Image (tube, rainbow, N blue to C red):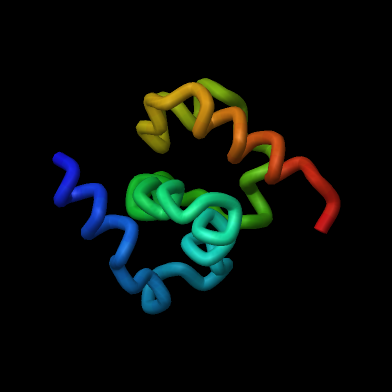
Length: 80
């Protein structure tokens, strides 16, 4: 599983990530990039991110780590 997480962090999402979600997650904390695929698959964009609830991040984006969900939620609600 650790190797799969490393691959998810290193993947190039530019062809399917028009909003720059992967870069934003990586800037927030490099290991958060591993959630990019699941978030994109669920239809998440940077514009939608501030409206997502904790349950959206858990169920739809499969972010099981509560601290990671909190970091993403708080950062998404900060002004740019």
